[in-house]
Length: 411
Image (tube, one colour):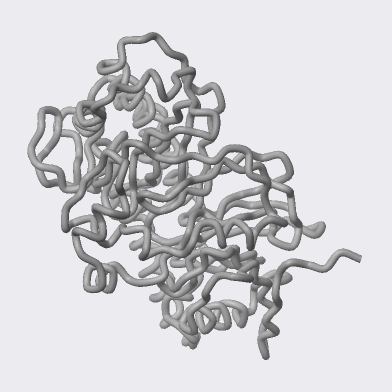
């Protein structure tokens, strides 16, 4: 009989925790968060833990939380629908210009990002929002606005969020746009972003609402960020509607950015090329209903990717490290899931304290990207070893392509 490649934490008074973390570090604080989660009364079967697991708000990032009859908004988080999109092109490494600087500049001008300085079409330091969104944004927003208006009728404060002007924008932190080469020197476009300001507002609003519900009903929790909404309540129904919309926004956001990224590359590389030869668009911070072990349950993936049998997914490495296009193996014990990346080993503050700009420049050698003090927190050494992460989850996915970035745009 084949030996399982995961470890089991048996939690007193709770469900088991199954961990695909052999060979990668898991900090004590993350283990405590997992224990807290496993003790929630509505957890179904067990909590599944991915090899990139690390401390998050209330619950660990890199975990899969199955629930019956309740949902924890903080487990989904505030970057609702955050995820990846990648598209293979018919370009090869030989088609890229020797100087990749103009290519990065063209992408930075085409996609608002971070707190970028004032540029044509941007609004200055408003988190890289559009000042006047272009036609692709208008077309995409037309598929979202009717449902959003219905949500705002119930929750008016969401109306004033940066929704329309954030559609097709990158954001900051660990969000990025990359041009990569695979093992055969084919060029790929890849990006990482989510639901931006409006998703943050939806997440924050319902997290606070769940906490208020806990106080109203005198429910004590091991961590207040495990506050939940119970099925059958108006708050639960409103959250399910809003979070579903935010996930649509996030997916559409990546599609608009990819459209503008392709146009930007075509403005620099005049050789005709096709794209979306192989395309993946997947969330890794989201919730949806799925069927597992014969029962319909809510699956919250907080920093985890769906990996059903045959399903393509993306597992990015850190800035300067390789990334992977993978195919799911449909492992039922992981609720058909895999990791969403390498996973941090230290906080952003600690990374900036420990590493220098010279370290950052050396770690990103050969990559056309920002090399300044404001991105030291994204240095590869602040993340787990992506090779160890991939080895730990070999039961969960098969590697289809290995990508190495040559251009990286960060917020």
